[in-house]
Every structure is written in structure tokens, then in C-alpha cells.
Image (cartoon, rainbow, N blue to C red; front, top):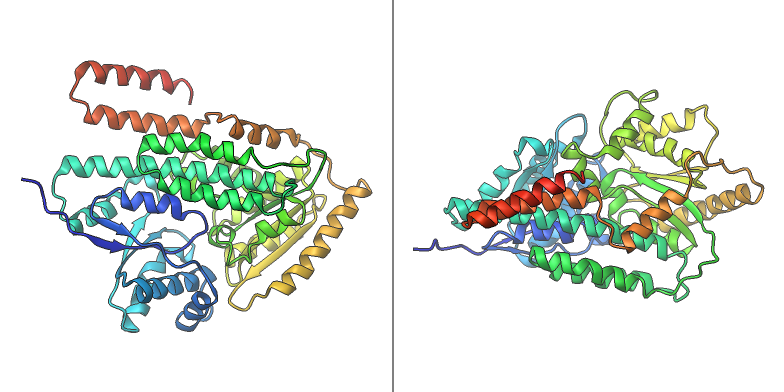
Length: 434
């Protein structure tokens, strides 16, 4: 007799385009109805700032506002929030936020998703809790649900990151203004509608095909800047005043490596780019002090090596690790790449940022015009090659790793020995590609 599955409404805080992957991670478990939080707005910020400690991280305040708005508007009482360990205050978010909200009279529960070290598989506890809530007791079904959710999550996170790179490439070059952003928004919805592994795979070429419809001015040679910083501030557009798209509309190509899949691979210990950034930063900051501080330093050095025109570092106003990284960058003896820093809190205004941004762009243009920009050690063509590979639907190392996990799932579910042998042979062949 089949288990009776309870229907439960559940949600999570905003963090830019990550909602597509987060939603699939949760809704792949039968019985969970995912309710997306309202987009971050002024009320979100005001509520979060009102009920949070004054000097806590800005993302903490935004999360609190997200929880309150989702609870009041949709009646959601169960939320999932990631936790971490180490020097960053992020690891304490869920416990402190839940205490604050319960003291305010909100009858809710925040379930922690442990992503301190994904290879320790503590995150599986979250899925066991969710299965217990829905009433699913069949261990085989639990196994299938978790692996299926993980595969779809990884695939969607990777595709979303590729879409963001394409948006940054096309936006400063588009001849029909607004078309890139429109396609980006529509393709996120298309990706969200893909509910199975096969549907996600079929969505990717359709998404790339839509981006290729954007007419561009191929004669342009836009300024190129590295955008990086604390992950929530960098990925949530309302929090950073939609900085990335503002730069694109100003004709600037934004290079941003920070993404959800970038972070997840780091937590699986297979993000070799981050390891390279750590080595570049080690002479200035020999250990991880929290936030993205060590990697920000590595990205600054990398930006100089690639000969980019500028570097933008964004972070919460009270984030000590990011403020430390800022201090180290300004004290470096190397040839100075044009740098601008933006700290964000509930008091940050658009006009002040716009004025500083315009002056920064004029500085970069002047340095390029006079030939004073740093000459690249590592050719810019590497970035162009990456864009071309995305457009050609090139299979990266990440794609191959995800496919191997997917085929392990097929073996686990296979009752046909011949089919199982075929799947094992496929895995062995794909291991050579990693």
C-alpha cells in the first residue's frame, strides 16, 4: 500500500537567479509545494532592517524581510536556509533569524541546509527531514528523490550561470535595446518549466538559440570589468541596485565568475579555478577569513593578468572579511588597475552610486585612450573562447561530472543486468573526460 504523502508549503530566501535551481532542488520531492518569495523590494529591506540587529550583515536583514513577506502574503511557515561554518557570521543566520521571528509572533520553522562541506553529506539530513514531513517512508523512493533533485539542481545551476555570462556578453553589444534582458527573463521561466532531467537537457539548446537571435554590433570593443564580492550582494540585483545590468546598459562587458554552481563546486572541492585564485592571493592573505575575501584578492590579481580595464568590488557595509580584502587591495604595490568599491546597506542610494560609476567609467576610458591600461599577460581571447563554447553547447568538465552522477542513478534503479553493464561502460568511458 502506497504511503500517504502530505502537501506542505515551503519557501527560501531570494538570491538573484538562483531561485530556478533552488526551486527544483525542493520540488523534486513529492508533497512539497514550493512558494517563491516575493521579489526583494523596499518593504523587504525596511522590514529586515527594523527587526534585525543594527550592525549585522546586510544579507541577514534582507533574509528576514523575505521570511516576513512570504509568511504574511502566502502563509508559508516552513523555510529552508543554507548554513556554513568558519569565521563568517553566515553560519548563525538561520538560528538567530528564527529566534527573532518567533519572538515577533511568527509561527515558523527554518530548516538548515548544511553546505559547509558537501562531501560530508550532512545536507542529506535536510532531505530526510523533508521526507519525514511529507510522510514518505519508502527508502528507495527517498534515494531516487534525493539523487534526482541533486542532478536537476546541478544542471539548472550550471545553465543559469552560462545564461548570466551570455547576458553580460550580449547586453553591451545589442542593437535592439532591452532585448537581452527580455530574453534572459523568458529563458529563466523556460528553464524553470523543465521538471525532468531530459527536459532540462532539451532546454539548454533552446535557450542558446534564443540568445543568438539578439542583433549585436560586432565592431564594438567595450570596456571590460571584473565584478566580484560577497556572494549574496553580488547575485541579488535589488540589493546591489542592479549594478551588473547598469554596467551593461552603459556599454561595459562584465566578467563575473561568482555564481551558485561556482560555490557548489567549491564546496565539493572540485572548483580548480577557486584553488588557483587562493594561490594568487596567498602572499597577501594566507587563509580564508570568511566571506569571499581571499578569492576577491585572487580575482583582482587575475584581472590585472588578463588586462581588464577595471575592477569592481561590492559587499555588505559591515562585512569585516570584505572590508579586509578592500584594505589589502588598496595597499598593494603592483601596478594599480582602476578599482571602485561599493558597500551596501539599507541606506544606500541610487544617485550616489550612479555618480561614482560614471566617474569610474571615464577613468577607464581615459586610461585606454592614453594606452595606460595594464597590458594583458593572459590573452582576453580566453574569455571569448568561453563564450563561443557556451554558444556551441560545449560540454565542460562540470557537465561530464554531472552526467556521471546521473548514470550512477540509472544503475541504482536498473533491474536489467545488461542495461546496468551498458551504463557502467558509459561511466568508465566518461571518466577519461574529467
